[in-house]
Length: 411
Image (cartoon, rainbow, N blue to C red):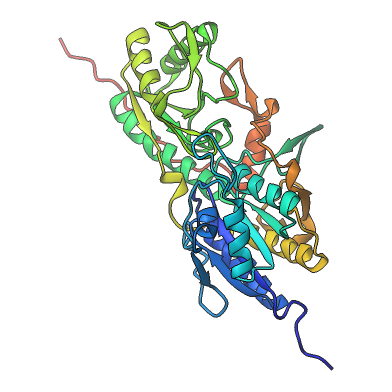
């Protein structure tokens, strides 16, 4: 009886592109291990699509240990676009094709968001490269057709590797920020990554925040007035005279001077996919709260904190379940697909039977569903909280429980 594995003599290569997350190394290790069991030799392409340009930058992952719990990506990343773009009009697809042939790469697994996997899909369609996409983003805005049922409502939700770890980090960050806000009776305006989607911003509610701002809701002049009124009332009603207000970096804020709503840019320089770097809206909002409401407000950027650190247990198990589904796709040679979670699941349900796959051409971006945010109160709804509770558990944050009687002076 032959003991030769099904894909012996074939080579599978893995690349990661775009922003890093704490779950990419886990994804790489999980895909690598399953590919090895099928008989593939496994290569790693360093710095995303950039590693397939020029002479190539390829490493052998076949017989090397891989520490998947470590956050980020050991293969490194870039925002390189092999197709012509405004920033780089050169078509570099011929370089990619040349290196795939030179290194004898038979199958490509691309770990990324809409940009990285969108480029992979184009290569699959135009050049016939066997490609499997693997989801990745802390923004959680990659359409995965993951269904979420709550009471009698069902919504098209999203769960992407990297988001669970980042969401827990934002929850913890808000809980820690709460103590300094209370110490000074301040409002802390906490800026959260997410670009065009408010999925990650909502995680701060599990750290004690209430009012929030998301990119999906344009903050025009009327909404700004409503927001200030609610902030003022919430601050007055707060027993500690303190609030944590998480805001997405992509919030479109009304500018009194220009009369327009726009995002705040940290840099207007665009990457090869046309994205400028956002950042700084928390400072604008905090300053206006202080000026308008006469309440001490400070800005706090969470920055790259939610992207950093070790992979969580949920993300670890999640990447393994998706890698199991990717194995099924490899066995069936069903390329141009991306493994996804079929329904919002708790940790124990993260298994291959709860996974499916979608055509990479249907990925796109998925904003926060309207069912998850109340635009009248600027609060995340109970349905969003149910969604998040499946992923990071119930809210856990400390409060100072003792109240002190006020001493009156004696005559």
